[in-house]
Length: 281
Image: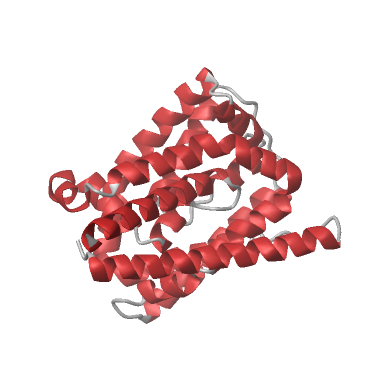
C-alpha cells in the first residue's frame, strides 16, 4: 500500500516538474534544461534520447507525467505567462529566479560529485563570463530586430531545442532581444498553425541531433561540463535580475514570489530525496 502511495506521489512530483520545465522554456531568461538538471531529470532524459533500448525499461514511468506536464507548461501556460508578464514581468521573473536560487546548493553538490579540479573552476568562470557578456550584449547593446516569418519561427524552435538539451541555454531571452518573443508566445497561445508548424520541427530535430554530443561531453568530462553548466546557471540568473520597479507594492510582491520559488524548489528537492530512498529505481 505504501509503495502504491509513493508511486502516486512520484507521478505527481514528475508532473509538477514537467509543468515547471515547460513553463521555464517560455519565461525569458529561464532555461528548461537548467530546471531539468536541478530537478534531477536531465540525465535520465538524455539517456532515453541517446540509448532508448537501455533507458526506457528503467525510466518509462517518468515519461507520461513529464510529457503531460511539459506540454501543459509549454503550451497551456503560454497564455497564462503572457498574462502574468502583462501584469508584471518583474514579479513573474522573480518567481522563477527564486525557483533557480533555491536549487543552487543541490546543483553545486551535483557538480562536485566526482571532484573539482582546476579545469572545473576555469570552466565555471569561462562559461559564466561568456554567457553573461553575450546575454548582456544582446539585451542591452545590440539593436537588431527580426521580422517574424516561417524561418524565424523555425529558428525559435531550434533555440528552444537547445534550451532542452543544453542546460543554461536561455532561448527566450535571445528571442526577446530579436523582437521574436511576443509574436511566438501569442502564436503558441492561439495555436497558430504557422508558428506551430515552424517551431515544433525545429525543436524536435535540435533535441535529437544534439543529445548524443551533449551526453558524450558529460560522460567524458563530467566535472568540467557540470561546473560549466553551473556557471551558465549563475550567469543567466544574474543577467535577468530586474532593476526597475513601479513602486513598493511591486517590490513586496517580487520578494514574496522569490521566497515562494525558493520554498517550492526546496520542497521538490526534499520530495526527490524521499523518492530516491523509497524507490531507487
